[in-house]
Length: 359
Image (cartoon, rainbow, N blue to C red; front, top):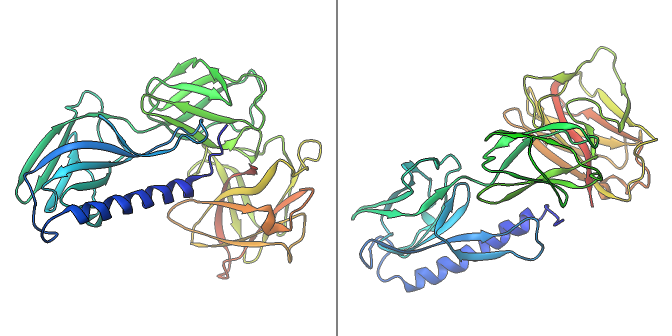
């Protein structure tokens, strides 16, 4: 399966293609940026980037289309756009960046919440000189995978949660599995054999999304997994809730840690399950605090060398990957430790989606 961590390359490809596109468009425009060079019309629509995450090397940019999938960037071509006031799809306005608009081109990220079911399939462009209604099919975004059991066993019946599961196709690696039940937000499936270190992918009518986590890679996934051996607390007065349900980043639970200043929490790996690092490149986890703060990650009990201090927010989850290259490239991973490092007399820290990242 394709490496799904190429998001920065995808972003750079998109930005480069947009820069070239706008440069060429500005060269073709006549008059000042506020003057329209022609009547208001649409001559074509292109998707900025087309890329199936399951197929290596298929990425294309600026691909003509007659379908709008919400949550994606599109290039609208025509004329009379220089005084653009608003652009909407099926009645919902999408924000536009004025620097991504010329008289002949609009580059727009279609709002993910754009309605798509039993709607009018309509794009409306409003400028200072008039309004244009253009008919084009509007469809849902690609699937959004919010949670699933990361370390299931073959034969388990699991529930995948998310959004936009419209006529879903579910794959465990390259093995397609027929849903037992499905709705727009949940899919129940039976786990097939031979899934370890493979990725979950879901395809809907608009495209494919691949989960970030490989099967079998979680230390914590709503609860300690088979990889988790035991935990160690530096200060016994710290309180922990290993099934905190009021907030989480993946699944339906997380770890709530009421940490004193500079206190630590260590997870020891079960040696009969997981110590060899040759298949992995990083440790991953998500963090959030009652106060925005910092946490120090360390491994194998070494608290002063091969460490990484990372920041997290209080209003949203921060996904963090720490490469083994930042941790001394251990040949064996025995323990993963966290130390409160905010410097303001402790914090309540939420930890979730703790695991390893495949190479």
